[in-house]
Length: 328
Length: 294
Image (cartoon, rainbow over all chains, first blue to last red; front, side):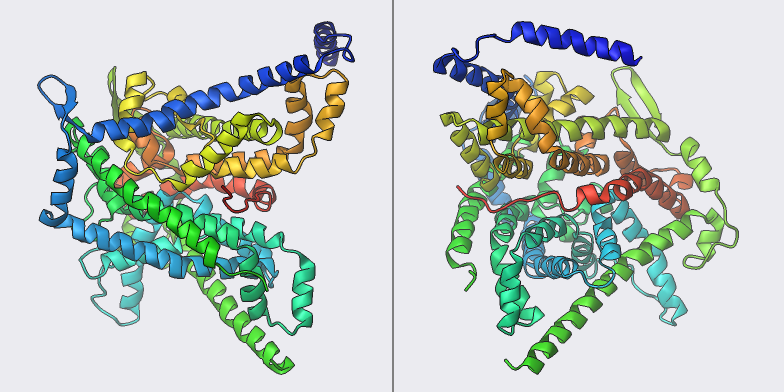
């Protein structure tokens, strides 16, 4: 077996020797450059082609769809001017779901930034400081990341609907409400779920960024009488701020796309008062009631969201870089 | 601040932080243990005993799951019942292929961009940054129509092509990795007559293999767990994650019984858990990404 393997290896080596130009020293500069260029084109060709179709093509097609409407008689899309945009903007005030969707998306986004992000940073910092049990915590904190969202939401849903009322009943509280139904409890429960199951990926990125911080800075801080608390706020956070900025900036689109796991919990039938913009658009395209006729309005809505999100993203990036904390 | 004061703030910060960490850990572990215990309960046992230990420990749920859990799909040949073992097979193919495609594309492109100083490299780098900064929202409808137009809808191969994308944070991670490697290795190779291809596959790739491995494993886990994309783009080849979503809304009461649901959740998670435990040091600590400069 090994003999055959070596034989094959030798065979390829011979070929490669024969194919390699012998007189390398005389190879002109332009020939070397040409070889580099050929290789460059070869490894880029397929990924660039993919990008042209699946990034540029899809986005251009979204813009095109947004100005069209579906004609069910011919099965073709025809020009529709700005009517899809008009329809969508009118729907903001005429439908009952949109005000809920906007309000819920906003709540989710703000809580993610002001509660989720600090918690992630603090947890990452504790793991970085190697508190007792770090190895154990690292695995546990990573659990929500390795479990499928559909697994955690099913477990969470049955736990909340089945086990939690049973526990309260034993403690003498009868009629404990189902936290996943009704307008009062559902969305707060969903927000809790999103925070609860949202640890993991950010932890790794922040953790790695923190481990790249120069130890001598921390030593210097300690000599200046900095507490652990001060070390976190005055050294670590400013130094890894570019990484935090990246997450905040990319996260803005999440305001429009976050489905808040609603599809996991309720399928296509989430109540209007729990919907988010991301969920609303998703169901509009893939729900069982969706038809080819729904694509244009969904695309127009997507385009409007992009037009709001894009400048906002650039602005936030600029502001964070301009006014973000820096190390003194 | 006095030394005592410093120690006091440190202590308060530590205590509050540690209690939050502990509280969170407990909140994760309780539902997980509850799910494990529930999966060993009989259906009737669960109805009267929602939180306690099982009256009789039974493995039946795990055995029955492979006969019982099933999704009905429709393809060109008509109605088809897909069982759990087939869904596992689909998941393996889907996660391996998509995970590999989503690691290879950014690896190739970031290598070219980081190491070859053609003008186009700068353009691609900026393009990636801009694509990350400019959110594209609501493109799903357009994506579906393009995938259908290309004739790759509902095929594994089509999914792999869709995932062969270099845009996104994987590009930046690979870019940082390749930037940190000296080009002198390559120059030495070129002097010896090695081709650019050989330098890439035999010198450069081995140097970034930990990064490659970490990104591949994370992508594998992501695609194993993801269900909405296979649901939309691969409807007649359900993966386990999509199956799990379907079971919850199944009309059969034997499937929607809570112990069976928990069994299904645990069965789906088990392979990923094993992969994670084996490779956890490879996954954590090998990914560095800086800010977005552009």
